[in-house]
Image 1: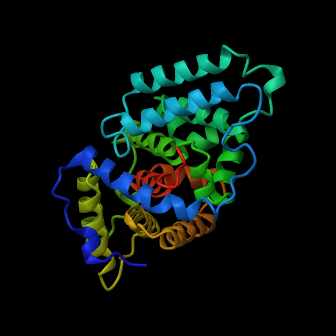
Image 2: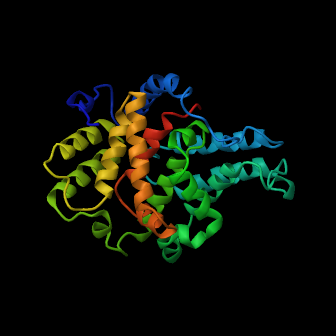
Image 3: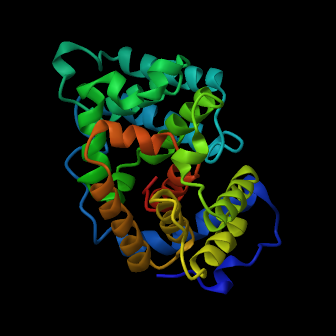
Length: 297
């Protein structure tokens, strides 16, 4: 699937977050009616069952608001104090009704994972950040890899939890903490002019939260005879960008399924996932936009 030039025209109604939000809502309106009959959400992935369901729904709304309403929050690092405030409030919601008690061990695993992931966004120690997934151990790595590789991303979105928006924040925090300490150009595969030009154009669009700029850059990149020699991150990001602006349900799902299949081939261990989290490409933010348009929230 390729973007058409008509997909890449600049919208004239404004820039930045407001424009992206309007585009996002239009995509949601187009996609949801055709999707909900096609995708089965695994039992209680949405945390709508159990004695503490109301508290977990409150936590979910807090996390969604954090990602959706923080200025530039999709493509930019949300301030740590705002993450901490949101996280503390969500934890208090659940603690107040005993949702973390011994009798609730099997309730809302996705919500507990979201709490852990947001907590990771607050890590500032470079040693711990460098190996985020490996550092936190099997308790986080195993369910994360299951959600990333095994469960269809549309089903994850329909649960209402903004998984990929939170992963994007984990990645942005990791990049910020490690800036200047590692060879990011090498990690990002910026070894030729094709990849470098696309990366520069995408990051400029991301800084302005301008999906139209990013879509146009992706079209130019895909129109090249070759996508360069920089590895998987550029092509992965191009797939995510195409999916983010595609308003056809089947096409978008095919693009996302192709990207998830690519992830399965590239991610075989927590170390591989840590590598993908270290990229400066706006990969995870674009996946969030592409996937979260399917959310029923």
